[in-house]
Image (cartoon, rainbow, N blue to C red; front, side, top):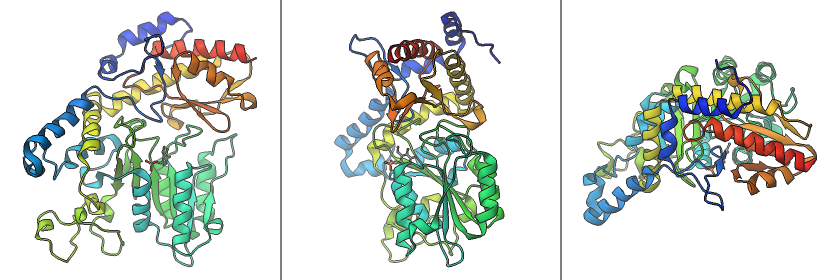
Length: 424
Ligand SMILES: Cc1ncc(COP(=O)(O)O)c(C=O)c1O
C-alpha cells in the first residue's frame, strides 16, 4: 500500500512505476483548444476510442467490398459467428462462463428481454425491488414491465431507501429482502449506482434473494469493466450491461448479457425468440420449430451487427492484455489517490458522496456541490477537464485505469481547488 502525499512528484513516480502505463498510448485522448490533452474523466459515460478500433472496422469494410455476402463465412473474422469472437473476453470481464455470456442489442432492450424470462409475477409474488434512484431507463423498464403484466407499478415496485446520506447500507438491503422477500418476484439492482457511484455486494444480495425464492438480476452498466465481477460464482440469475462506458466500444455500443447456466435449456422459462437463438446446426434448414441453443445465446434474436462488434473486439483485446485483476488493482489506487487529495480541499462547497472503501465503489467518485452551483463544473470544463454533471448537483469523476494516470488526478485536484476558490 502506497503512502500518499500531496506532492506532484509522487504522482509522477506512481505513473513511472505503473505496470499498465503503456495502454494510455493505445487510445485517442481528446485535446483542449490549445492542443494539450484534456483530462478525460468521463469513461463512466463514454469510454475513449482505442486506436485499433478503426483497423478492426476497416477489416470489415475491406472484406465486405471484396466478398459481398460471402463475408458471412469467408471474412477474416467471418460475420456469421462474429459475436463468438467476443464471448470469452467478455465472460472474463464479468466472471461468467463463456456459455453464460452473449453480446447482443442495447442495454435497455436486453433488460426487457431478460425480464420477459425472469420477471414472472403471480398474485402472491409480483413485486420488483430496485435500487434507490435508479437510472431513468431502468425505472421506465421495470414500471412498464409491471404494467405489461397488468400490475400498478406504484404498488409492485419497491425502491430501496437510503439510510446513510445518499447511500444504502448492506444491512438495509438485506433487511428489506428478509422482510418483503416472500412477495418479491424480482430483485433488479445496478451493480454501481450511476449517481452516487456506490457499488453493491452482488453475492450477498443474490444469496439473500435466493433464500426468499426471488430471481436476482443486475444492471451492470457502471460495473462491467470497472469492478472485478464474479457473476457465475455469485450465483446471479441474469445481468446485462452496456459496452460504451468502461468497455470503450463507442457511442451506442452493444450490450452484454449473462444468464446463469442453471437456467440454460429450461423449458419452463418463457423467452422472446428469434432465429439467432435457434440451434446453429439446424438454423439454416429454415424449419418451423424453435430449438434453442443450450446457452445464453438462446436469448439472441437477430444476426450480429459487425461494425459495433468490431469496435468492441478492439477494446476487449486490450482488456485481455491488461487483465481485470491488474486493472482493478490500479483503479483502487488511482481513485484512492483522488479520494486522498480531495480530503485536503479547503472550504465546504464540495462533498464526496461515494463511499471511501474500495469494496463499495469503482472508478467513479461523485462530487456533490453546494447549492447546486454549476460554476465549479463550468470552471473545470473551461480548463480542459472532461467530466459530467448529473442533475441536480453532482459532478461525476471517473479516472479509468486503462488510460488515465496519477498526474492527471493531481492536476485535476489542483484545478478543482482553483474552481472551488473562485466559486466561494
Ligand atoms: C444504469 C444504466 N441503465 C441503463 C442505461 C441505458 O442504456 P441504453 O441506452 O444503452 O439502453 C444506462 C445508460 O447510460 C445506464 O447508465
